Amino acid sequence: MTLLTDALNSAIKAIAPMTLIDLRAGRNPFDPRNQRFIKVLQAVFCVLTITLTISVARMTDTLHRLDTAMKAFQQIQESRPLEKLTALRKMVKFDAVLSKQWKTRDAS
Image 1 (tube, rainbow, N blue to C red):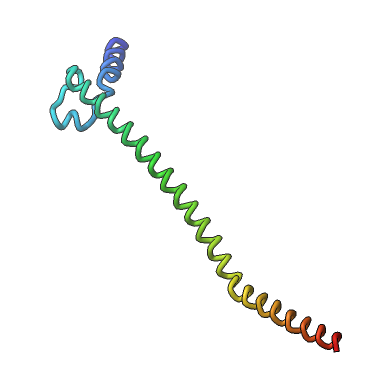
Image 2 (cartoon, rainbow, N blue to C red; image 1 turned 180 degrees about the horizontal axis):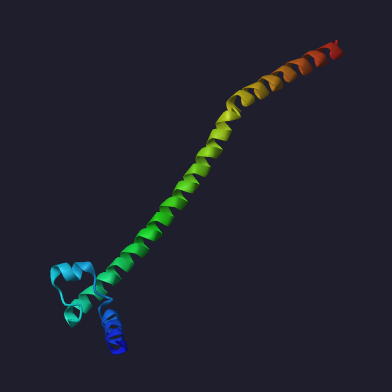
């Protein structure tokens, strides 16, 4: 019984790389050509995964920067800089008129 269990365990270890796709397609996982194909396929998927991860990270970083810029722009718009500039300009003109009036009164 132990010999049978050891034999089954070693067989399971040997066919562990076999997938259901291999079984359905009738491919032999022990054939060196199929092993090379699987290794190439794994390498392609690995490169594809790394590429997608990097591109998603870049897009996320770009989105974060754009979001930060939009929030800064909205804060500037909410502060209404043109209205403040117009009010400041009116204050300067009004002060200039008042100072001229005081100078003309002092001179007379």
